[in-house]
Image (cartoon, helix red, strand yellow):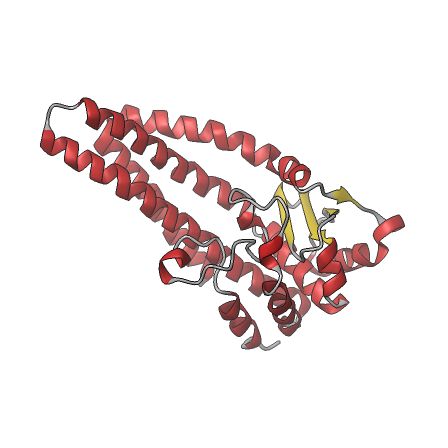
Length: 275
């Protein structure tokens, strides 16, 4: 079900882009905005893994200094027929983890020192399985495509504001200004909704990989209590983590702009799975 929801939301985002772009800038405006968004996200798609790992001071490890962690990753990759990713440890006491990379052959999994200290081996396995599920489902590619459309919509909105200022038609000016404010917000809400659906899908993929969904559920419960203190955390990379570093806000409006679904809901769904 999650994959159909994501496809529907992506199609909706694309339609908003085409409609909004044509209304504001015509065919030429649509292509210009799309080309700019493609160019900016092309760099992100191919180099974001290097940048995010460097941002969090991640250190690549091997069997000589992290054999237990490597054994867990190798076992899961063999069971799921997934290429072995590069494995990193982040020198941070806040427990968290993320996966990055544009495809299974060019991927990396990173965990913090705090996660290794807090979780049991079974719980660590559940977390790694979640991250490998992201890799297997090409979630970085999905996120990049969504970012292209959302970014293009934001650019068109900026063009529209300048156009409205110079327009002599007050009626058109008002419509353009309203559209330029509403459309980017709608695009952002859809982008965040897609991100939340991918988290549910990765949870399910992890449960199917390990056949022990309660291990991931237990890990999520522990991680939720510590997730808000990650050093260097920023909004641009928050969606990568298994638990958002900004998960403390609980009001309904803010939940629309969250990259992650409710941890309690994720735990509930995992505990309802039987294998």
